[in-house]
Image (tube, rainbow, N blue to C red; front, side, top):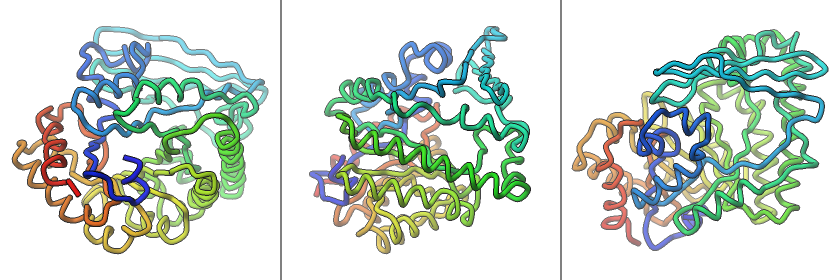
Length: 370
């Protein structure tokens, strides 16, 4: 896998459909909150076992560092509703600047959804943000990452995740208000983005200095253009990507970025202006804007590519013969010269037929050999 991620030519194209989130839990049976809330088992373990079940090449999104919360913050989680079909959990963060609250709803067979987010007034709650999002880097540990990496073993690679700065859509209620904040409080938001970047640099320095050796550092920035804009991505997210990818390149650590939705402009700027090694999922229209063959021809010498089978029209709805046809087209478009991982254009849906995932492994073993 790492050979392909760094532009090299492996024995065969890795088969690595994105099954990180729902399929591993579906295979276990029972309510999804057993995994997502009670960590029984942790999602990372469910994914590792899913990799072994299908025989795919693992590409885990679940590697984390153990970062204690801000020393002046207090956190509390409590179940406020539990019935047969759902679980509702409230999280409260108290700090010297105030109190923030989030509510998440866990449905029986779905991952959780935030139904009330922490930030309801960006300007009024600005001083709370560092307590919400920044931990105590001096006490960072990597025990959980090492456990995940050891469990994965030779079955795949585990990304150590670092979320690049973006608009605060993940924490803002309502989500549209994150865009209004950009225009109404631009200077204040830009100041926070700069502080966020500095915080990530401190974490990167700790990763490089400590005894942890991640398989790769992963930037899991879903919708980095779709949920912002190309212009905002270049203003807020790109500077951190340049800085961190450069630091890790110098340290000999592989980097990879995920940006579902529109991504063509990000591929170009990442190839031309950063030291990023690998990028995914290269979604096709209409949800994305990527043409795999064109991207391979223009940027395949600078970036390794991971993608890009459509997750609904191909993986969910086609039979194995249709999946094979589309997968072979991806190989034809991008496997030449190495630096390619056969994957999906984002997360495979929960009800994706198992036989379609098995088919990808078969295709790579039969047609993806170098």
